[in-house]
Image 1: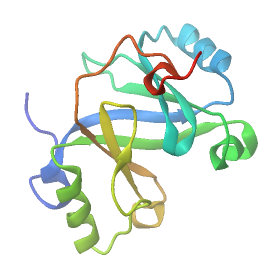
Image 2 (image 1 turned 120 degrees about the vertical axis):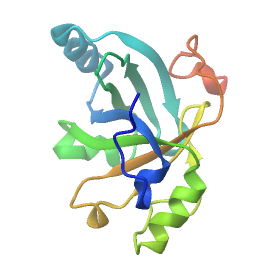
Image 3 (image 1 turned 90 degrees about the vertical axis):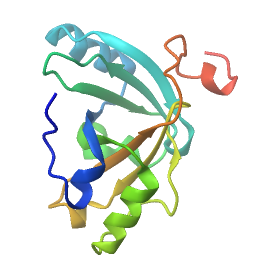
Image 4 (image 1 turned 180 degrees about the vertical axis):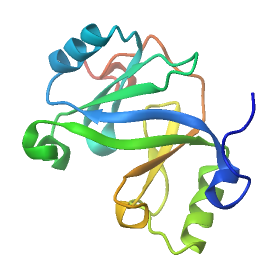
Length: 160
């Protein structure tokens, strides 16, 4: 498959679009959206750093995945006055630390000093929107195989 990204700047680190992040206030609202548009669930997870449940949809055949973010506490519970909405675009990159250095060399700032654990299989960091025309951009590096058996809380040893 042809690489759609330029081999310059941050583009040289991008493998593909990973997902579009959408914040919704409840799991039920995420499931209703999925049912309405015929989206198939790929896997679930939980991000401790942002205390949010995640539902990832499948991708392929030209379809990007969607990540539904269901915040349990913190600032994301107030996203769009608690109604939710499109939060970010995420790119899978080959080396998140190299990508972060490249972004910083270009004068950009990221949310975290170092990448943080997303789900147990990825590490993430975000480029602040003021450097990307108002769009929050997530950088993702996959560091392990996806655990398709995980639930929102099983990854961290907590009961459902």
